[in-house]
Length: 372
Image (tube, rainbow, N blue to C red; front, side, top):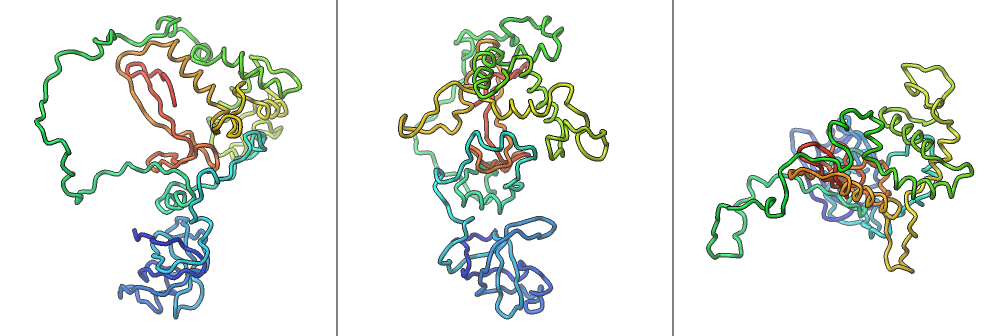
């Protein structure tokens, strides 16, 4: 990939191999494909998405000397040699604090259709664009280059003594090699539980009754009860199991169920659509005052969910005793809006955009212990 030493913008001058410009037939009239020529003094006239090999890519729109009409080239393939007076907005690197953020209680809470996606699939040229916008990209997953040579020598040049350990660090900490277990229930009892009973055992029901429901009721006309909250939660779980439903209204539609469009079933028997929207708009996850820079000296972009995450970790700590084999993994909470708090890109993930979390799970029974 050709490195770009300067940002692009209208009026910038640069060059690239002639075979990389499009439309190909127009460029090949002047620069035959077999000649392996390079187009120089190419002027950038704009930017935009264009399809190259059936894939949408961010491109420079350019004017090539002695070639009539507008051409385009993928940004990653073009070398800017003379910078513009004003770089493109997408190639400026703003400070992270300058990135606009929507109000946490804005219209997205009650939006009926899916959020408009403003990120792509994590391809290389898009990663460069995200970095230029000041967004964090965690892509340090590539293996060492085979031609990188020998690693630098260690600073310590003294003797290295390797000994076979004669003790077990787990035993030193009074850990016992036994199966993980729940504090309040034995495994035979758990085996006879229903799915809902298992969910309630692992869920933060006390936190719901003490924090979530009271704070949500502060914004509701008709009070929310525990049973109704479980119905609201179940509606979201059901909807999350299906892809391609563009409008939440489809789940409460009065039209006949069709195998070709709409939702595969209806949720009217669980909750009315009006009530579902009321609860969604009023939902709150904390009873802690929002910190501000003026009053507290800092800003917490995850304030809305921090207490809930801490309560979940504490609940797992006090409710479950793990075995001495644990697994640590990272996962992505997928977001389609790059202005969500903590948005980052992890290209190696199947869904590369969103919040990156780390979880610890029991290595024997695959019970999740905590997440952060």
